[in-house]
Amino acid sequence: MDLEESNNIPNIKSKDKDTVSLGFLTFEEKLICLNEYTFNKTLNEVIDDFNKKNNEYTLKPYFNFGNNFNIYNLSFYAKKDEGFKKIQLNQNIMLSLNIEDLEDTVNFFGLNYGGSSSTCARTNLDFLKIYVNYENRFKYLEENFEEYFIRNTHLIGKPQLNKTRYYLYNKLINQLRIIACNNDDIKKNKINKFSFLDNYCNALNNLYIYEGVPNEAIKFSKFFNINLDKNKITLISPNFPKRFLHSMIFIPSSYIFIIGGKNTKEILTYEISDKNSSYDIYPHQLPRELLEPSLISINNKYIYILENSTISFNIFRLNIPDISPIEKIEIKNRNDINVDQKFFGVVKNKNSILFLGGQKLNMNMNDNISEKKNCFEFHYDTDKVFLSKREFNPTEFIEKTFIPLGDDLYVQFAEYKKDNKNELKMVQFNGKEHESEKSLSNN
Image (tube, rainbow, N blue to C red; front, side):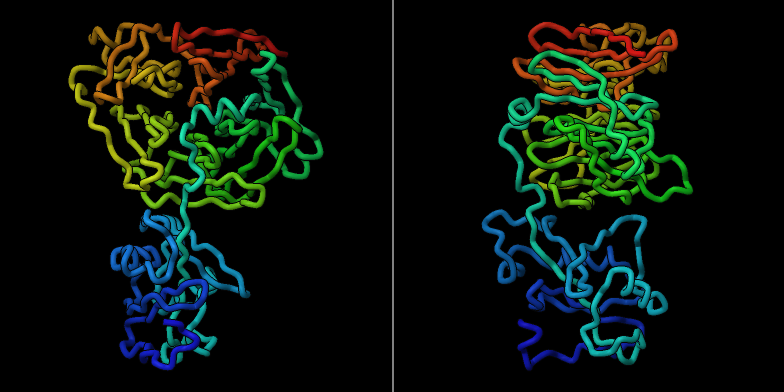
């Protein structure tokens, strides 16, 4: 039904003083549905109700989504000043439709009135509008993540701690250098010295950095990238949600997932684009708070999330194209093994995920497995964890996903202090042989 052209619009003014009418429309002003909600409903609950009541058949007349409909590809917008603004619904913004708060809600999101009144007076309000659009969230997924990364990346960066410099590795000539960030970029974008609280990931010869902010008084984090080829800093946004103890992973060809962090269960995604300065919230939350989880993509479809920061070791799985709820992996031999390795890097090793570096918990010194200084590995084809033959070496990784260089060779970098000098450790893993380490001293 075209809202502007129809002469048969029902009487949508609320007769019940405890309810408000809310309409969902397309960008072309076609009314999809209209519902009554009590004032104590939140916008989260309202949109969740819309998702439950609509499906492929009810929405097909309004959107062209081909044969692959997914309810979680719907995005919701408010209209303000003739433009559309995506509504970011998250646990920190649970605005109620309570009549006392209605004007603030409308002003905050720019929600339109369906009636002619510009006041929130209960007698004059016809209905609020939320606009709906169908957008394939991850339409630029490559068939082979690893091969795409290898073909399109020859520069790898790592921020140098307590500096505004970064290590730059060129895999084509096997060269490692230290590059000072451009001073004009630092001043213009107010870039702080890099901290071990900042998280980062490499993507397409760029270093994407998500500032870690533990200070409760600060409400936002900076999100920016360094073009490693041009040594150019671009501030994507100064107002990303505050994060602390989070992790990041690049998913080819165009996505960065931000997962974990203190006091949050939300997963954020960022689509790499020159004009994109905003994030999306993944439709499903983590089952619990995860601190510095280790992330790795498997089978060009899943992100495995491994975390061992608290009482027990857990593995979760995110299905990227299906956008389904986060799945907890039940480790079949959990009672037979004690995983005492945490904050480790992860690398694919045939049909397993090998844990490299990190720390040893040594929870139970009477456990023979704990006493062995070896790494662990998770076999994702059987959902079992085993003690690897590979020797454990303590290494603190910030970017925990090992980067493929080609021919079963992977690399990651870690930095630590030794004799009052910065030591950079380049850890290489050869799936055909074994991992090796090379330390480089820098003043």
